[in-house]
Length: 85
Image (tube, rainbow, N blue to C red; front, top):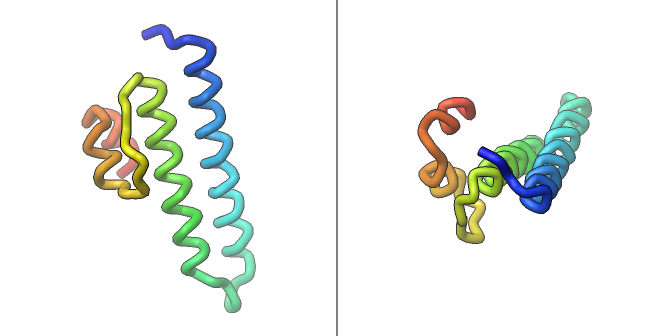
C-alpha cells in the first residue's frame, strides 16, 4: 500500500501527539505517592486513541469524532487491533 505524502504527514502528526500523551503519563507517574492516577489514565487513553487514529488515517479508513476506543478498534482490521492487546 502506498500512501500519499499528505496522508503520511497526518499520520506523523497523530503519532507525535500520541507520543506527547505517553510522555505526560510517564512523567506524571514519577510523582510516586502524590501521583494523580486519573491524569495518568487520561493520557494513556489519549495515547491509545491517537495511535488508533493514526492507523485509520494510514489505511484510509474514515472515523467519527469520538474518544471511544472500542468504537475505533472496531474500524481497524483485526490483525492491527491484536497489536494493542
